[in-house]
Image (cartoon, rainbow, N blue to C red; front, top):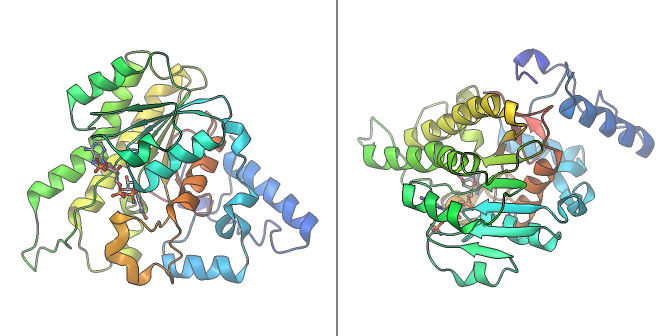
Length: 317
Ligand SMILES: NC(=O)c1ccc[n+]([C@@H]2O[C@H](COP(=O)([O-])OP(=O)(O)OC[C@H]3O[C@@H](n4cnc5c(N)ncnc54)[C@H](OP(=O)(O)O)[C@@H]3O)[C@@H](O)[C@H]2O)c1
């Protein structure tokens, strides 16, 4: 599926979502067939303006955005071996916990021992897995006794203070750290798993949690004055890496998705807590189901997509 602006021609309303229940379900089916099918030619992009996006979802009562339980099918994860990299807290912990609750054999990695994850009902917790470390990757490979069906890389880092050139607040060391963790980290994980037979071929899935911050096209709306250089560069790096990886892993039958997890009320976004309500930030257990719903929809037909887990629509590069 290509991800070009020419695809922005069909709205959810045009697809029948505003009609009666039957029309709405029909519209939804067509919509998902279009978005997830191989031959989609008209697909709606998500909206760059997050405040407007949430207001629109409320106005149109879009269940996909407002009630993830109405579409998420946990049973699709039952019996799957699901690895969550970065499961110590926030979204990663909730993704691992929700996968376990869905009946998956959930495995979580952490950097250091952690009570929350050890009490989360996971089948296995692997410690000392830092995505910037070769040794951490060896520990990961050695601790997995058989291939996983699904790997979800959630680990990420967003430096606290705002970076602006004109304020003399750039922090190059932190910029490298974000690029190392968010951009190169998931590639290290993929390299370790795929080259050591720890991610199933022919049907395996690699979901990389990225961010809308990686969309260059959306900067004009979301950062019209520039700023936060390291954060945005690191996520553009994640997206480039994931897109390339999706091409390379086609021959192995491994699907790769780049997932923006939506706006979640976690440690990472506490600095934006004043806009949590108006921009639709959700508790991470809701965000986790949104991510797992998109993981359930991954296939070789949509490999290489950059998806907003809030509404299931594509984000332009
Ligand atoms: N929250 C949002 O609204 C939002 C929006 C867009 C994208 N995201 C992305 O979603 C992911 C989860 O976000 P969050 O809000 O849950 O963040 P968070 O609460 O800050 O959690 C970050 C997670 O990443 C792990 N981590 C950090 N550096 C690591 C490293 N070098 N190696 C391995 N693990 C590392 C942390 O482990 P430790 O406990 O060891 O530090 C923690 O588990 C991130 O990738 C983030 O960029 C979040």
